[in-house]
Amino acid sequence: MDAGRLDRRITLKRATSTANAFNEAVETWSSLATVWASVVPISDSERMRAGETLAAKKSRFTIRWSSTVADVDPRDRLTFDGRDYDINGVKEVGRREYLEITATARAETP
Image 1 (cartoon, rainbow, N blue to C red):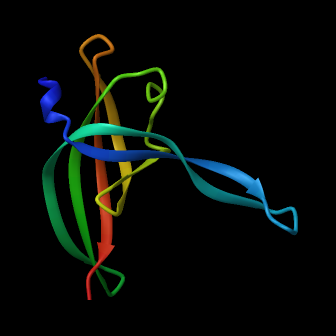
Image 2: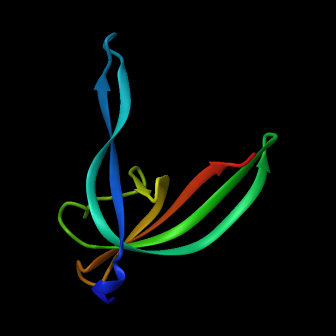
């Protein structure tokens, strides 16, 4: 892959657990890394579920491999263009050259 294609900024986020004022566990998302990526839309869909119309946008993000992002997995999340994406899968491309992340953004439509 040509490094010039990594022309979009994404932020990878990881869930962390903290305690609130009542000492209850609260899940928050903290930034793991902000990296350059290439983005390819895979599909978009709209469907009815439980009386609501849901829209989903699936994309493939390719980023450079680094020790910081090497352990990204579907428990993590990413933010791109103001939208949060749930990570569906991650695979290594080459020998520690790139990571290919498939992710889905969900948004309700009126």
